[in-house]
Length: 97
Image 1 (tube, helix red, strand yellow):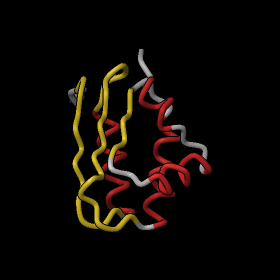
Image 2 (cartoon, rainbow, N blue to C red; image 1 turned 45 degrees about the vertical axis):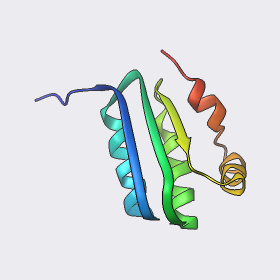
Image 3 (tube, rainbow, N blue to C red; image 1 turned 90 degrees about the horizontal axis):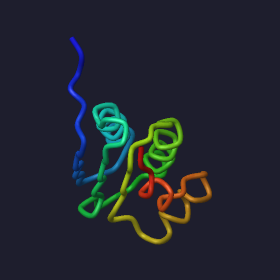
Image 4 (cartoon, rainbow, N blue to C red; image 1 turned 180 degrees about the vertical axis):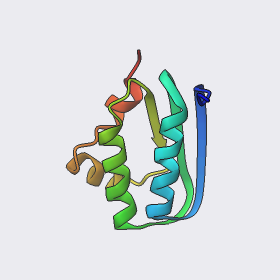
């Protein structure tokens, strides 16, 4: 049975952003249709672990999908680290089918 694909999905996370959170992001990306949009809200995350940030970069890099991904709630330092890891958040947010 095929999984329904969503055009838009909001993923709100809180607490600690760790490897389990990265898996939630990966699962959310899997259900967003090509050309759809995933908004990841990290504004309520109180601790973003280094492994979590690296895992987020890996998932976003491997997604290779034509889905728009908007990540909000990151500090400028975290945005800069993602950029060093090869993730351009502005480019991800501008994707379209």
